[in-house]
Length: 158
Image (tube, rainbow, N blue to C red; front, side):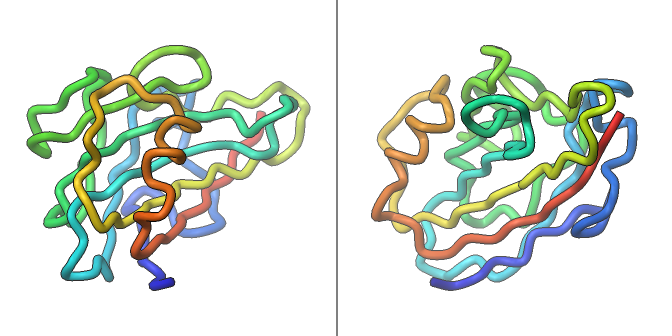
């Protein structure tokens, strides 16, 4: 499997996510960039989750997919709508709050450091799906179609 390089101008891999991008701040999505997308990729998908959450499954902060493979990143403060005007064709799913779009870190107070995994997938086909999927539905849809993947990890604690 090919590895993608996922970065952010807001924080480096393994570093603290600035408050602006958390539930304690403006709760806007951080800017993301990536490189290494295979030339035969058709679409990209991104899932952000927190495996340190005190829940049975990782807490999902963002599900965004149908990102054109020609995109080299996402801007800061992506709209919290199911369908995006930019990048064209991109749609969003449901996070663990049951809402659409990015929701930033908001771990329990005193719960220690949480790790937020921004996982990007390059897909060999355009997904025949609509907006509103949750993480598990998206993972099922991309199963067998991942050409490459990469990850950026940020931390946060209260």
